[in-house]
Length: 415
Image (cartoon, rainbow, N blue to C red):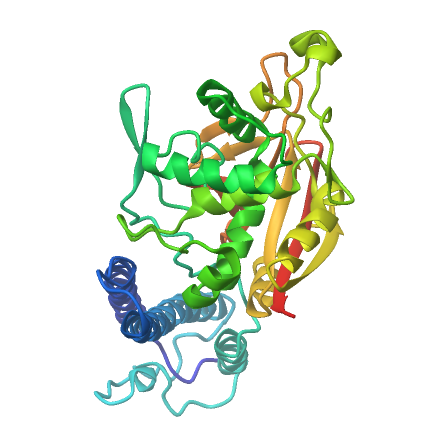
């Protein structure tokens, strides 16, 4: 049946070569990104340089994606060809060995053969891959989710690196200088009678850690919107988007700002006894909300109106679209992010996994009860795992674990 043959080993060699190119280009992209984030200058010149570096990073990532697509295409060509040959009774007849051309990499693999099952299937495959019809895996490219960040926090004498989105315990473990700034922001947002002792403020940050996953995920979406708009961020929020000492994003300030502005609110009014628990705090008359270290958390149904109010005060419109317990694939995730929408998953139970698919964190308490956790979805792997930002780490989850997985999108726009 076949009028030609393909030198499979040559295709495999080319596939490996383009995979190598992808790795090198990804490394260049990370170096460009690191340089952009630590520029020691400010003002219009810094903005111009950052924009130029961001464009360079974008171009390098495009080259990296093209190398990855070509590598995948070559692999698919091999598999498709082998499958057709196995099903052909005359695969050895009239074989045609592909000749090489130095100018066009595709000419190595596409000789002037006659129309047949392989040829038709190959053209369809290439059309789908290079026109974006097939998206088997996808990951967001953003400085928010960067494994090369330089900052860290100290916990029990150990140094823990941050690198993949904000951390709900970030404010609790931040430096004294940053805590002073956080305290200033928090007191500005809370009622005028709010008064913290040093111990009380530490307890407040502990409470943020205990219930802050939803706020952290939302803070990530806010920073995503402002990438490339650092001057506007400063104008809208009154503090820098980047830590001037480290060059890294001010996740901790945004998390604390958002949390202290919308937690325990109803129609914009602070609810003093929202976190009161008689078993923990005793007599209600003596309850001091400014010394409470535990809270009940929130979900998007409870907080979306408060989020809209908070962003409206910063001259930004907010659109929240709740998809419910509806699984999405890589193509759908890319469709959302291409439109400027951030995707968050709120999970009950199940586990989070590391890159080797080992359990990193179980979402159950000591009694076996399910715990809730909200995270930004930053990608979907080719084997169906969701890539998420959780506790400043790049982790993975299976959609169908636990009792529920609610998904929603958040999009911002100028008023």
